[in-house]
Length: 336
Length: 240
Image 1 (cartoon, rainbow over the protein chains, first blue to last red):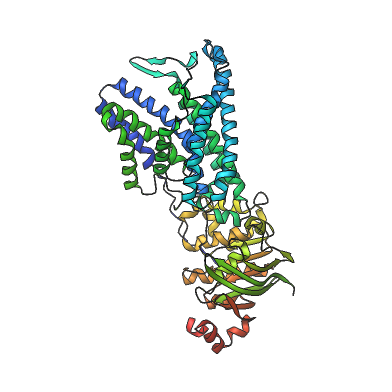
Image 2 (spheres, rainbow over the protein chains, first blue to last red):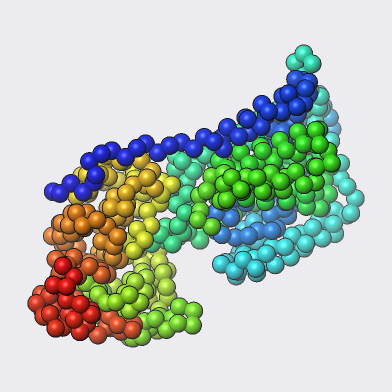
């Protein structure tokens, strides 16, 4: 049999760690600029917690973008719906939330989060079948349909729950901070970091250790070839869309508790941040999305502290800088 | 010899362009049929239409007597059609192993089948855990073909496997495809390289302007220089 390959072994593929080093470098550069180590630590912890929450909300959207090539401008609706649905559990069990017992608090928070994810995921099923399915491959119509869907969802939330802001106070055991010398790190931020990290690890395990994950990664790169291998990628699309919607719902609950309030347009500002994260991370890249979310949160927190007047444009400037460095995002997965 | 694949009066439109204009062809079981023709004649469109990647606007496509022209691509693949596209389309972010795991739709990779493939393509064993994106063009083509044969297939549709490859790799690839042929595979292959077509083909179909303009045995076309010049615009001698 003829030897087909070049005899020299290929160089091992280089691991691209520059994007991983970027948030570390940003954090280190901020130490002298901020001056106070305790303030720096507090801001860094706040950035990581905020970044994790944004990552949870954006992770589904990046897969939807990458795998399905769908521009879902209505992703924010799942965030708001998730937050409102959580109040259905949080409000009746307010007494348990105010009890000074971590387990009693978690016994209310966990079902609230699961119900939010279930409802957001189910809403994702309806949105994909009703709004997205007729407009696959038509970006302009996708923008119109999903933006319309977002408006309808927001107005429906107003109609059902009323225009007032609904308070969602933190449970007693998650109030306050862990104190390390001069440094105070809010307990809820630690929980947010842990949940975000758990979601990131879970997604990475599914994507890298299961055949389903292989299909998703392959589908992000070349949907047509996945179908030519005999897999029904439409079902995969639906599953990814529902999972992304459910994660947005979870993010909505976490954001509601972070801000301690819920309102129908709560996702408007977040949607901009999420799209920036998805674009700078690289469409379809979970790793890029994770780093992008941390960077966006760092810019918001460090920037808000150092240059508050630049807060409105800081994330746009970050996106411009990243895209000038890597035009297809930190980790380019698709060719789009 | 029974026909495994039959196309009858197949038309395909892409947007406002009428690409296939009434294709009639048959691919005999266990034979390799070469689909030749100049660029833009409709060869790739024919393969993609069979695979369901582009829908036939009219006509009939039968695989082992079963109509498939209205079926979705995954259904056609599940009937046992392996497809090697012109672009190779390996999943560059996945390793060689992951590419093949994905192609083994019906379960875990079969060790005996893998050994058989490694016999053709030893490079795939060597770069088993390397990202497919880091392979050379020839190695990607090997992976693309290996992906199509990692499980037994009824029919292989192969689009220009030698395109852009170095002559030494082309020769090796021809040997590999001959080995696959000897295993009894039924193949419909698009090829611009007439030398490769002559080496591999039992039968030949020549396309022009979306129709079949010649059908016959490969040996007959290979030995008829005026016919080659008339149909393909150049002869085998000129090609060599």
